[in-house]
Image (cartoon, rainbow, N blue to C red):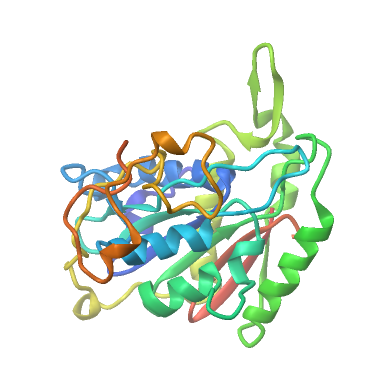
Length: 292
């Protein structure tokens, strides 16, 4: 791992979008990826919306947002989807979806998050790097097993034809129990990890999975440097009014710069200003799971 370089990972991301999807632990990995690939993305434009189409961006946000209450009695606030654009073509995109119920379960007229992304946004060459499962049950005590197991069954049904090779990350993370975040006065955070540390190691295991399952860099002729239009986005800002599937804690503070009336127009204005343990990686030509 000490010899693993951003140049090696960049070869696999050229011409593709790496979709980083999940809860706050996956947000840590997204930020670790931004840092690791810092020489390869366009800092002049900052973070860009996952789609320049405001109506489609709203669909992605609402498919990812949760209407469920955790066993700790609160709702998580969903980030705005955002991406960094790689200079030689390709993107790393963050989609915050904190619970597995949104990933693969769908109802008539309401596609799941993965159905929406694969049907309207992603290309078959793209890579999905997905996490859910270690949900907060008094922090260090365990999972919400009923919803977790149901979500795993839904995900298995969604990808039934592809199969799910498992990457064993659990043994390594068990040895790194001391690498969790410790906050003075609050104690151990048993979900999140210090960085550099486990997030960077997860990036390395993703890279190794490409090689293990024969995922190849795209030929130069197949790589387009053309990027979707960059609409600046602040991922941890409140979403525009009316986007959340439930009322925001203080809906008056949400931006109203975008609405469902935006239809299919591609606005150039800024958007959103104002396992067994559940880590999954998927590439349309091959499907990976991780026992995290």
